[in-house]
Image 1 (cartoon, rainbow, N blue to C red):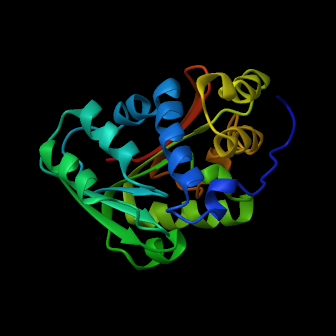
Image 2: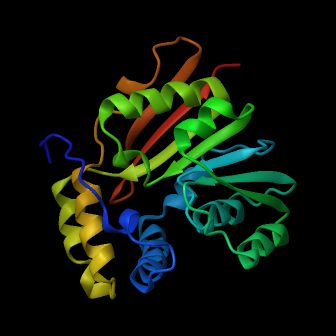
Length: 224
């Protein structure tokens, strides 16, 4: 899909956290993530010994928990950043069972990036596509100051991915998930679009490209 990115509002972002359709859509997202294999893609880029690992746009924490399982490492501090704290005690318990100490922070991502102490790694899953280029460039510049490693797994903007998004009803996904999946693909990335927004600095090694059937991965790693 050679068309330009198109960023539009997603229904899940507008619904109250406890709305039944929102809860259902978050469950759908877990299945969509499993289909895309995003947790394994991110875990492959996070070497052992990184802590803290922060996720921006973390939602209920389920994605970073799957990353924790895939990494198999222990004694890691997990920081879950989102404008709505929907991380349950049960979710924190699942992190603890894998040797990760989970802390939820309810904050605007830009405010958190400006104010937080440095972390070893920042990850983003299906989050960056919500932002237009100027705000996204601002976010990435802030992340470059705060982390040694940045990993993002986003929708791949392609005709194949768009067709897949349109078929999610066959997998039982609700109206919110079906709408948002199409919107997400249209706002997704291809080629070097994220690398072009990262600060121009020789201290960073950047990699970006298609992974799997539907995903687009961007990795920024500070050189030793």
